[in-house]
Length: 72
Image 1 (cartoon, one colour):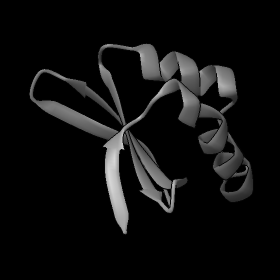
Image 2: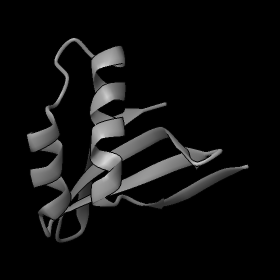
Image 3: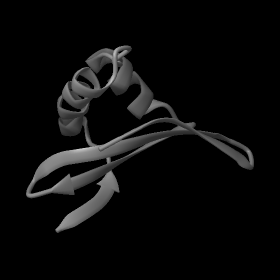
C-alpha cells in the first residue's frame, strides 16, 4: 500500500539515491537535508513496503507554492 507522509532525516539518503537515478542534476544529501530544515519548504514522501518510492519538494511563500522537484 502506498503511504504519503512528511520527510524524516532518515529518508534523505534514499531521496538522494533516487535523485541520482532520475536526474542529471541530482541534489546532494546535504542540499536535500538543508532544504528539509527550511521553514518555507515542504517535502512529502511516497512510501511503499517501508521504502521511499517517490517524493515531492515544495517551496511556498504567502499564498503561492512552487514544486521544485517531483519523482517516483
